Image (cartoon, rainbow, N blue to C red; front, side, top):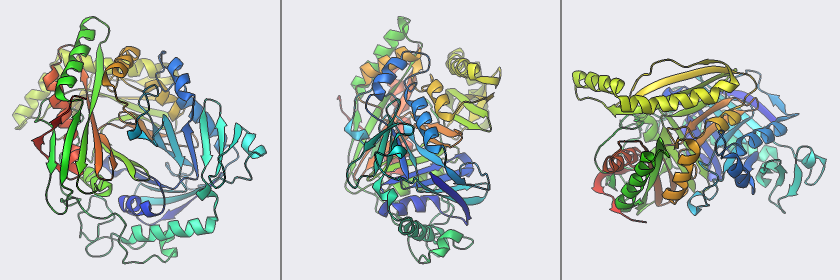
Length: 569
């Protein structure tokens, strides 16, 4: 592997993500809360993914305390380390998030049956991009990666795994222990100069898109027409890209990209029935249908079954999810949706992973784990209530939340799990004795940040320990997963699963992919879930998931108002 990093001037990450659709089937976007870091991963120099047999190994491992990714995540980390051995890395500035970085995600539960909706999103898939653009600390960096393949079936293919040919014109591949497959696509082995010129032309467009009247600014939160600052990026300018070019995919769904939206809410009870109708403005796609799967009757029956299991002492909590299937008269615009999400949810991780025409995207408030310089960070976010209409009402709701035995116990369940899981691998672990409030625009939560110091652990290994937390699966973990498999009936795929990035040192950051959905042309599938505990009300849980479906629907140009079509399937 060869990887080198250079400095560049500012680029618009979403314009880059949009425009790259004409050059590559492999694209990903990652934006941390508050704009502290943004990444765009383009092309595939190499792909690591779970191959056949991994799910079977996970089935055996999933019965233990490490969870359903106990086999996959460490195997993937081992394969990545093997690829990085002997790598030529030129990243002299030492900026976190540059150099060899893989971007991708895991499935929520590898034991769930295959679903055509999630084709291309297997049990684990991480991509070493040909080009990685990183914005952090007010600076922009370009990392170019390439894997040199002397030949298929030679010593190069057997150093750490078994060589396997992908067939003529399909690149090269190897199978590593644990069923992890390393694939070097044929496109990544073509002449480096030609590929480089194509990427630089795209960078020229992205760097100039925000610097002319009527275009989107380089800040993705800038409304259309806002003036940009600065000049073309250094690397992009070298390619001589046209200064008047418009990034591919630009366009709206009826609202200005920078129009304010509701702040990121990680939960909340009640709210109007989730629903959808076309916004009908500015070229937004007209909505043909919105179908809830399962329908309300089946959903409430599932919640009652969970309450029965809780009453028998089999479960303390289980998190149940459902989906909303949208069909429109014209294709949805993922780029416009990402701009709205970034504008309306500054406290969230905004992400997108594109496989050809299919885009998995969302805005999640929940970090699973961050590892940097041996310092590990996670947080318990559980227990919630609404915000008040006045300061006095807001303060009263906050006091009730802090004093609620039910909400405190639900929160303590997550804190105990995180402490007990990280304790064995941390030589220092700081867990505050009392939660504090995390107050967002529409909801406030009990929040406990947890930090520690680890030696030798990597992000994939920590993910294997942590996923799923009681906030995403339930407790006890094994029984909650069994209940979800039996009752939900449809795979969650990458919904509510770990998604993010890690580097050649095993450091990086992973969030939990909630408040998310899959967009494919004129169709979209949105996901939402809620925790069921003793005392939960099935009708209120339906309303809670309805509320959580609204933000992404609105970002896609669909506004609340019409009732979901009830579908009992």
